[in-house]
Image 1: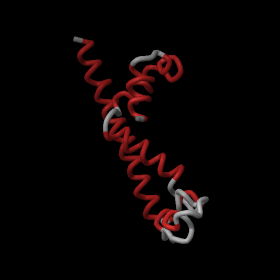
Image 2: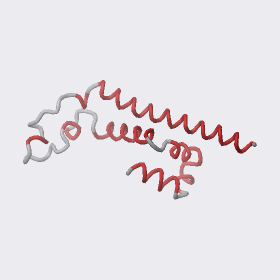
Image 3: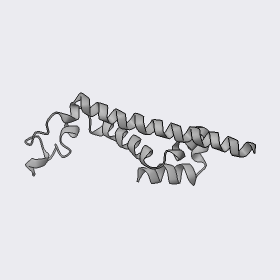
Length: 117
């Protein structure tokens, strides 16, 4: 849903992104459509919401007492606060961004060659 909202609506159907961020950043976002955009957004969302030692990262429904499976009585372990989990999330974000940059560079390179001829 985020991809449809950001790329399809905000970047392609509206001129607002070009006015706010310019043509190069808009092209970068459009060229990242597909798994690179999903990897970056998924990694950033996980870093914001599901990484660390806060209550929400350990148990999504920590505030309720009705179902013990979803609160503090069921220990979640330490994977959400581990260094290896952070590294996996950073690989997703950096890898997706690197592929988006490669696609952006290739679009500029081939576009300039086509335009020059």
